[in-house]
Image (cartoon, rainbow, N blue to C red; front, side, top):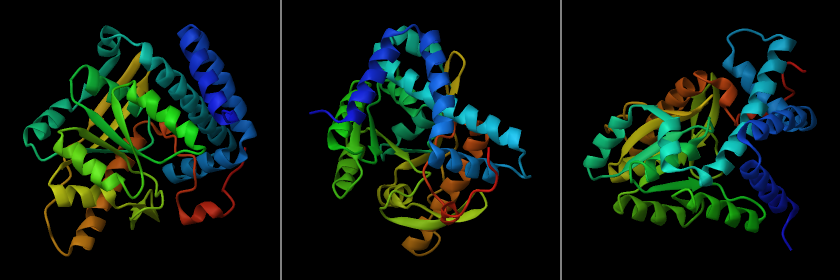
Amino acid sequence: MASSALIGYKLAALLSRKLPKRLGLGVASFLGYAIARIDKKRRDQVIRNANRLSDSELSRKELKDFVDQTFESYAHYWVNTFRLVDMTKQELESTFSHDGWELIETALKKDSGVILVLPHLGAWEWGGLWISEIKGVPVSAVVEPLEPPELFEWFKRSRNALGMDIIPLGSDAGPQVLKAISDKQLIVLVSDRDVGGSSVEVEFFGEKTLLPAGPATLALRTGATLLPVAVYNKEDGCHGVVRPAISLERKGKFRSDVKRITQTIADEMELLIRKAPEQWHLMQPNWPSDSQPEKGRI
């Protein structure tokens, strides 16, 4: 018997595809506002994120507006992602703009692999579909497994339909990623949250926390080009931004180089998030202080 979570996602996907886009987004906005008031844990995390992003104390109204915008953005993300499977190549090409694609093209010519590192920001699946369908470059993404398992299997099939190979994070992920690199696939690593694997301490938005060591470790061991990336939602589609490659120059012991490069990744993600903070969909605790009462309530 299917779980309630799986049934909910399938229903949301069906409605997103069947409803006219404007109506679907309107319904998503309403649900986003409602969930922002019901889901206290996620709301409090978004408030903490808002305070980290701000140089000064935010007012009650500013916090409320930021929370509403973030939950609305997240709801729109799901509607748009569910609709991608029905998008024609012409629609995909006309709705996706970009800055920096030439950096990926140059890296692909080096034949040593390309790793894209990005935060939970905007709509990365839209960018993955554009890369695979329009540019003809296969994409593999390493993601955290979902519970229950049948939900994750449905998620994998959905992303496979968008031209992406999904690699579950775990003990088998390393060999699968290495094979994907050897097969000249782009590797996508969402890297703004520690998910329990190998990690290193960095400063992220002015506070010490742990971030995955995987991207830096993989790049150092393979020589793959490491590119910070974000895909932002915009009114009529998405806009991808590719930042210059992160230097992999060896300057010390392997572990210290991993830490230094991971700090650079954190700095790059900060820069990308600050361009559209309301599209940052990180709603799980990520810093040691997230266990403390949040500063500011709405």
